[in-house]
Image (tube, rainbow over all chains, first blue to last red):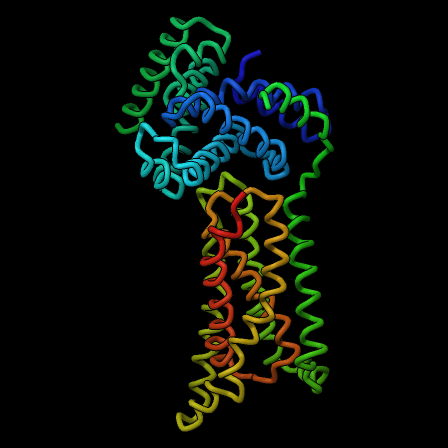
Amino acid sequence: MRADEDVLRGLMLDGLGGDAAAHAVLLRMLVPVLRGFYRRRANGGDDDIEDLVQETLIAVHSRRATYDRERAFTAWLFAIARYKMVDHFRRVRRLHPIEGLEDVLLAEDFEPATLARIDVEELLGALPAKQASMIRATRLDGLSVAEAAEAGGIGESDVKVSVHRGLKALMARIQGGAR
Amino acid sequence: MNTDDLISRLSQDVPPVSRRAVGWRLGIGMALGGLVSVALVALVLGIRPDLGLAMRGTAFWIKWSYTFSLAVAAVVMVVQLARPDSARLRWAWLLVVPVSLLAILGVAELARTPPGEWLAMWLGHSWMICPWLVLALAMPIFVGLLWSFRRLAPTRLRAAGAAAGLAAGAFAATVYCMHCPEVSAIFVLTWYSLGILLAASLGALLGPRLLRW
């Protein structure tokens, strides 16, 4: 099964309905996604990364009531993941972010960035599902091509082609819209 | 503990979650705190003896509508900030509406009153204690909200704390209406709002420490 928005959201909704099996599958599918997310952003040892993954899984489990069924699951998930990273970093002071902590901290409250992200989501909505989810995975969620391929259950070259075609279509769309 | 074991353990406890779970949690926290505030007004401060009579006049309802609508607008913020993906706040402008309406009433009231009485009208009889009493009555409601937040997932802790303080302050002012005999709009606009702002500032100050999870 592919760990994309629709699948994860469906599992989350079943879990919220009381389906323990769906909830277990969801948590298991989140492990590689979260590992990828933290590996890209935090330059810690594997123990640190695994601590963060576990903390986030616990938060996803214990705070699942705060998921709004009308909204994107991945946005909720990564908001928690980001919060846990900043919190963990503040406490442990052992993780050294690669991309610069200030980006992480500022991006939290940074409205234009969020608005831009919402625009991006709208644009992505117009693309075929595979292209949109591969762009989301590699360009927004920070997965590597290999991780995105694994999460999506497709080949690496397929990921690259999807991202390339998707971006090209988006460029054409934006330029067409500007004219 | 290894991650697989953790997941098996977590998956043993998966009760169904109501769609309104966040709202209920916040509502219960505020209601419990609110009851304590009402009890404090009734038992410690005392309910104004002419409350029945006052409730037939407009001044009481203007005051009450101001504080209550401000509280509702603050709760709209709290509900959004209780979720992790709260980067874009909606409906924040609602907070401005009660303040603007009361300011218009205040100006109209000043225009009707001779300037010599303005100061007395503005300070009333209780300007020195009014903000502090509102702040004190806000504390039980704020604590109730802190309890609510323990199961919620705020990621903007300062904003969430400020919104919780604002909601607590505005509800406390609504409760305080049962005690306070002041009638002028500019009194309420200044001293009630000051008490509410104190509660919101305290919330913003404490939020990052108390709301961590």
